[in-house]
Length: 425
Image (cartoon, rainbow, N blue to C red; front, top):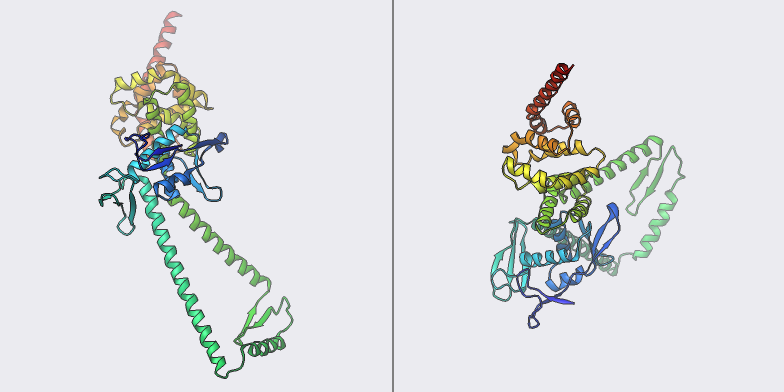
């Protein structure tokens, strides 16, 4: 089935529209941590949009906060996690809006002009002749610029190789011309040199090493003593280690920070909850988001926590949102071995967000609200208060210190209960 290339706003079923692309075909494979969504016809869609399949595939990774790659051998795109075909098709429309359709005439007759030196990407429309810059704030732009720079470097390298080959050919041509003028035939020279080298060869021993004489009469010596072999092994291992470090650094450049991935997953969950997802749907999607982003298991609770409370402004709003989503918080905590401790860590991390630092005085209110709805007990809070945070960032410690009034309140409650018991006796 084909649909019109109109982005997210036009009529996809207009039979008179000239520009069409195949509808996306998604397929979920695997399970557990290995679950993934395969876009079977990614190459066909990219071809109809006149865009590289690598750009098209990377866009899903940027939007979903998941790892994505194009398998050239099997001709398919792979995105980590389980994603519905309907949602993926909406992302294709968004890709068209940002990187295919002309902002002026809204037709897909554009090509991307990449200026890697200036870090700019431009739409050049063949229909209306307009030139307009792509939204450079999108993360795909970074990938496109890096790929263009690497491609340029490869071209330069290939060009230098061609020059070297041409020089060698010209030298061989000069040598052949010299032979025609009266010099000794090349084959005879080779035979004489081989006879000469054979006569000079010696037996190879571990003490003496090995001597070889090349065509130019230079004698090369290879030392096979234990010390020499050991030295060569150490040098080879150092080279391999350096190559591995370079490869690791290159991979790190293309990956996102965990906090960035978490923020993207929180945004996706917010959009789903705003669209009317049920609690069951939320639980399933949170697991998919956590695995797709490569996050730790306890951060499922953190994704839910930030999504539910991220948009609230004041104490009353926070308390109402916590009480409204009590069942969801309880369900997410049941999935974890030490749910209460992880909930308390979610509260601390929540107030380290740049937009929430000003509200960090409310940390005691948060904990007391969870205490009032019986998701936290006094024992949980006191154990957490007594534990030392193993974290290099002092921000968590400073926020934890602001819960002192709550601890004092618990102490006072305990002392009052003891006094009442004494009076009863």
